[in-house]
Image (cartoon, rainbow, N blue to C red; front, side, top):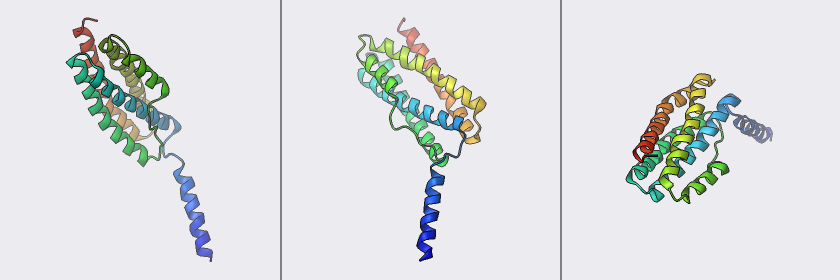
Length: 166
């Protein structure tokens, strides 16, 4: 009868151990913010594909969906390996931003400003900080690998802003 108690005790210890992340609080926060931002970018890209008024915006939306979906999958695997729980949806404030953008009479201009320029500026800042300050080498490597894509998105948005004369 001692075996079931030992198995139960070990199971409880494993569950308790699994509840703790294998990275610093700072790295855990980065992973969670990066995931929330990635989910937002995929949602925003889908919105651009459906509401975009120009082919340039629709194409940019498709690029956001493709690139951020790939990064999100890599991020999920990394977070799982480090036992970090990630959000399943973008933050409410970002969802409200998308709702506002979706009803703007000049969707393309607002999308480029809010998502392409402003949001990517925030993302770049977050990833640059992780490249410099992350404690975990895998977290730092993810940030280092993803940062050029974020910069390319911002540059693409800058080009869209200029080509639309805004």
